[in-house]
Length: 263
Image (cartoon, rainbow, N blue to C red; front, side):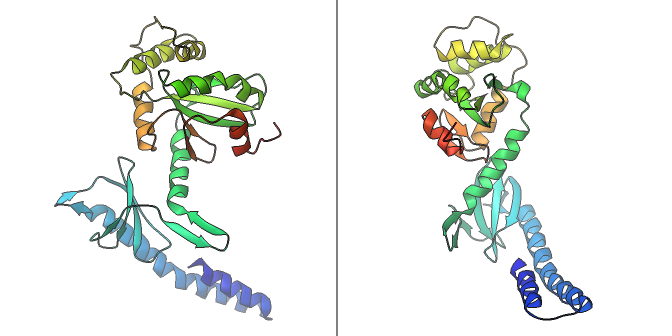
């Protein structure tokens, strides 16, 4: 739809037109786009209100138009997403790709990345366990961790090197076995500690923590957040652009992914 405006602008550059005519042409182009945009928004709103399966309303959080005419992206409150036609009679589950001159672009993953960035921005630093080193970080990664996970332990051993490379590490809690597990208790103890980063290091080294676990802590909230953001295992590294990288990544490779090859 925006191509209509671009086409008009290009034609105006190729011809001699008066300012008045240029303004009139652009107004006409915008006017031709608005009905389509309004229709798409109205359909998305109607679909959000009416979408159901087996007569039961679906817990829809958001419906938005896609570049494909008549196809809408549906995001549920659980974080799951799929695609639907305008009346909700047909669904598509999977990723939507744009075929560009430079290759395929995963539009579904781009949308998920943006959602992760927005969701993590709402988590204050006071609710994270932070390792930033002594220098001002060049990049920050958020890691959903579990101190009973061997690869989390391996990643934690690399934190000093990551800090030296200018990479700050912010931990969020994701006890793989659930909120009733020993890992959840250990992380609650770390967050309740007077020095959470020191307590987290001890937990990652499999040293027992003896402090309380019943303070007001964000472990349950962060676990649920991880589930909503697509975390399925630990460590789960989220880059500044929202990309989710599952599993352990060596420091040099992570630095390269962040554009810090020469760090």
